[in-house]
Length: 465
Image (tube, rainbow, N blue to C red):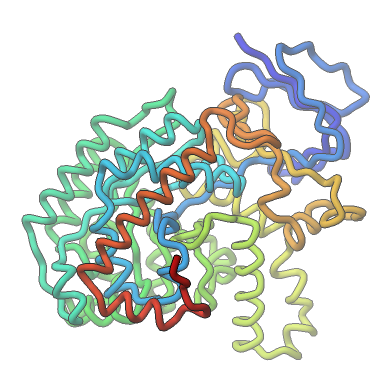
């Protein structure tokens, strides 16, 4: 039995009582927290000791909706065309690429403080192999969609049922090969991609498979005007009503985005027990969802996977939304700037809130005895965060992923101030860059008009050797 002691640290437990220990210790045996104490209490002896003076120790972030599109940084952001670039480009990443690219992605999650991530990808097996190496925790889904992407580029919907069958079988194989792998750190779920990209019979087949195996389902719900209009056109139902009619909307569903939902849709989500994965959308009323009692967690979606930056963006977006809806004077009069979006509540959403949304709060999301030892340690011995009267507020408003010195999952340290512990990150990044260059070159060869669009958007001119 391996034991670890973390001592001399500030500790934010994110438990029900919102306990904060100014100077304390955590004793870990194998993968579980066994004791938490104050500095003046006797500390157990341990095999490994980390003296984390000037560090804030807290639960690792739980990211409940993420894609792996960050490989194409500098491309997606400039062109910004989901249907003509993002979706088609996904098809250029092959299964054999994903272990190479996956190491870079898994490291990005860890550097951002995410100890658990829910990741959706078409070819997830390579990423699973990467996670096995890196040591983080993941809920992994092989997305299922059955539209003709070439037709979609022209603005037309055309379903390909055979494509759906292949995608469904890939998801089944993911479950069979990886559920519970890597000492339980890899879990699987089902992901029919979106209400406009999947046929009703496929949703029902997914539901039957998931129910028999007690698996969760995640899907994109009411994320765009285009999706909403297409579902209304096909079924004369809102996307939320459509899922309810299919029996998908229940307490096993994690619905991503839910931007285009009516009051009636929101009540249906509440009554069903489903959770919502919130990303940074100004129009998403996630504070109202929380007030209603809908479980809400946070996901970085297809942005870079830096939870702290996302939380700041979410806070700012909600302030803009509140200002537009109720007016700046009323916001100030009701103290809405501070009371409605407190730094602690936002960090709570990214830890225990997200853990509840995916049904894992009995194991992760807070630092408590008998729970998994999944935690991060933030260095406060730097001018970005100190001096401070409130470490939690300072972390949310001024912290960044570079301040996260240590990341532990299952009681094992997987990142320290020198970098990733289980593999050579610089080599992995170089290999990933080489692979991305090949993929993008092939995409631009097939779609030269997209290369022209990209070059036109560049703010500089590429030189020639």
